[in-house]
Image 1 (tube, rainbow, N blue to C red):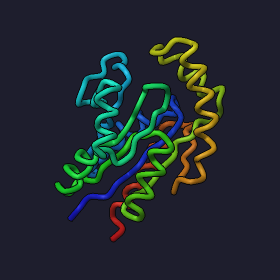
Image 2: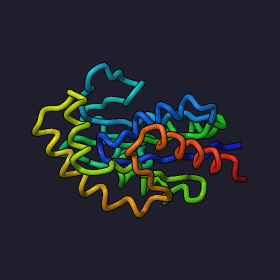
Image 3: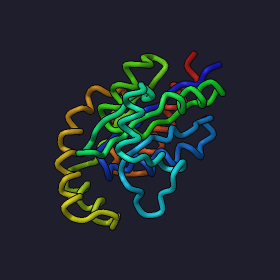
Image 4: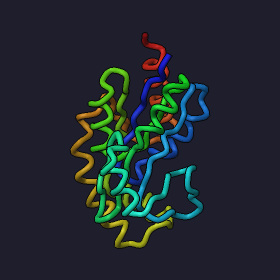
Amino acid sequence: MQGKLIIFSAPSGSGKSTIINYLLQQNLNLAFSISATSRQPRGNEKNGIEYYFLSPEDFKQKIANNEFLEYEEVYTDKFYGTLKSEIERLTDSGQNVIFDVDVKGGINIKKFYGKRALSIFIQPPSIETLRKRLISRGTDALEVIECRLAKAEYELSFAPQFDIVIINDNLETAQEIATKKIRDFINKP
């Protein structure tokens, strides 16, 4: 039996990755869909673990070869996308695939898979909370953070297009809600 798909989207700093890492430990038969990106690794990120890191030229060649389920040029020459081969490999083995993608990618994956996919939007309590979270990470320069915040305001406008919106004002509560919604979805025939 083919696995189902769980799509997570959120503005950067909303807690999406923390929630996903929690879910991967909850005995839900989840496999993480490793996205491809043309950006440079941050911190301790490793190729094939957090992302498949490609040069902008390699990424564009894969676009031309129709190798992506979805992709987006999030910033100039900063692409993110989901390789079709990655999803087929995981779902064919019966695993449920969890995605960490930008909002447009999430909407596109949901359209492609329909009822076989559950789309979840993680929303920060406020833009100011988001600013504090991004600054406390210590991974980006202030001008990068301001760019991310501007993008976050735009991304928040897509929340109503997702099956579920979870406001992450308390991490434990957000994790519990996500776990229950996903378990119900996976167990539904």
